[in-house]
Amino acid sequence: MSETNGGLNGDREDIHWPSLFAAISAISAVGIAIGLGLPLLSIILEKRGISSTLIGLNSAMAGIAAMAAAPVTTKLAHKLGVVPTMLWAVVLSAISAIGFYYAEQFWMWFPLRIVFHGATTTLFILSEFWINAAAPSRRRGLVMGIYATMLAVGFACGPLLFSVLGSDGLLPFAVGAIAILAAAIPIYIARNESPVLSEKPEMHFFRYIFLVPTATVAVFVFGAVEAGGLSLFPIYATRSGFTETQAALLLTVMGVGNMIFQIPLGLLSDRMRDRRLLLSILAIVGLAGSLTLPWLSGHWQLMAVVLLFWGGCVSGLYTVGLSHLGSRLTGADLAAANAAFIFCYAVGTVAGPQAIGAAIDITGNDGFAWGIAGFFALYVVLSLGRLLFKPKRT
Image 1 (cartoon, rainbow, N blue to C red):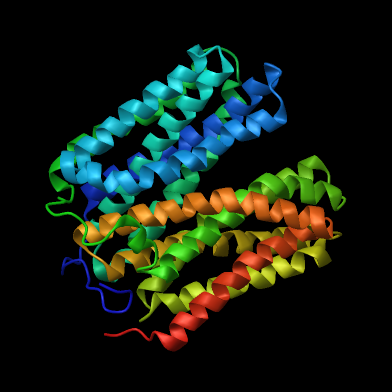
Image 2 (tube, rainbow, N blue to C red; image 1 turned 90 degrees about the vertical axis):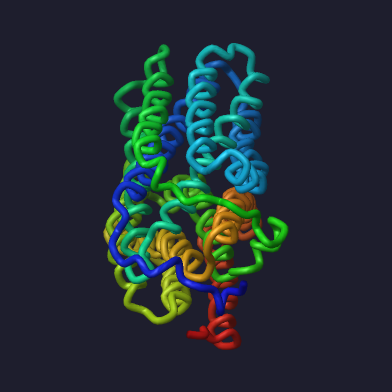
């Protein structure tokens, strides 16, 4: 099955709310746990006197675990079932979240990171497969927009919880674990609504990376720009003359753009004959926005406006890319492609900070903008090339 001749997922045109709620609960729990856990774990390690290099190395286990978990998730779901696999992932991620509190030796945090992020990656993949399989073809963009919005809300709630709970004692770890465990309830309630993987994918896992390249490269660019931008933007902003508070507010504006644009973009994608055109437009806007950053360094308000729309466009690559993937594939192929989709996202989160950081070291502070522009330019060339030379067949 190819990107241009895949089928739609059935004729159902109403939104399957139990499936939607189960998948959203799973992904929101993941967002809250990761949003709470990332700053919490870094702060605790810093208090213990662990060097920044080792903290970064430990954090990098997240991307490595995601890349390792993606190829095996579909096999587990085929063998055990989608819901049992998700429930096991919930349990493992909750146990490992608590485990960080009791792990006194630093080396213990490496296997814990691998288990935690491997399990949450499994939840990511299967919740996206579930919601993509259940989404009606004509309202897939809306459903994916709701899904992406709730994921963004979950990520935003995590740091907010951290600011309230702090880093002392068992409480923040327990709250993260409880948030994950709570997702098991709607997953179990909707267990009879989950998709069934009765057959294995037709191809090897890595073939799916290239099967729908407009979607998989979109999420690679999203992961690279999101991870690189979030980790290095505070450095870029303060070197550009903004205060730490102003830099933090600009990141908040980007997060707001992420949340408010996903449903409108999803609705817009439902009205388009070919979602690849919208993905190309989003990439062009992202490229233009990144190239304007060096000229906005003295204007906080203008940068805030640009980042509001830019943040929405960056996240739109994820939402519309996922919708495009679901419109092209079905069944076991869709499950495997969802795993490849998350694999590409994980690769992007590893590659983005490295490439953008190197661009800053080589060309100076404006290298932040040039590095991000490079990722968007890559996708503009690919997406426009696919539109021109691989026209959609109806």
